[in-house]
Length: 231
Image (cartoon, rainbow, N blue to C red; front, side, top):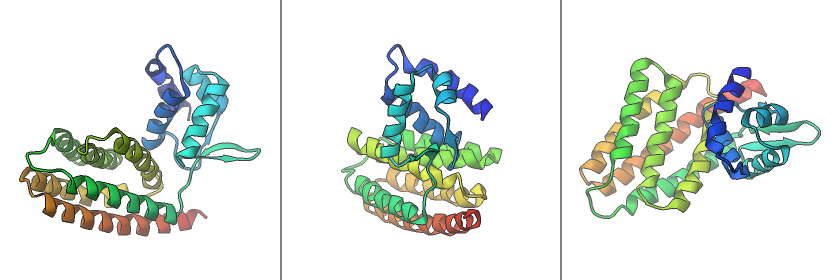
């Protein structure tokens, strides 16, 4: 925890001269997504506020924003904790992903598509797999899907899915075998990228729908087993 707080202190430069709750929430959202604060972790106002150099009121407002996004939960007389998802939460996240991501691919229009960021996420995944860094591979997979959503060119859609993907990472951090979870999807990402490069939009949408359905089954299987062990 102390090491993570030192890393968090490095984020103070991101706040600029006006330390708003939104900027603090952005930093904490990223840190939660990266696993610095795993599900179930109690967030100390004094420690985090001191690391970021922000007031208690600003930090509480940031906590409120992230609670609204379902990343944090406030427990009376206990404090604020990183949320532990239920299986039903995971299923709902995937329903949202299927609705949005498939709609983005369906609405791409005529090729060629601007796939540089999608390709970079695939390359990031290959590097992580070669290094045996399975947590980083999971991160690259999130980057792949964020880049896919960004093809819609919609700030509102990007903002919606940023929150959805951050919430999804809460499930990933509970899984005890990240290689088994994430490694198969690198090949899927490569295949989807190839299909989009070839301009086969309808086929890409079908591939993505199957991909997400099978991903849901896999995540729910390991998540149910893992959460069941900790209850």
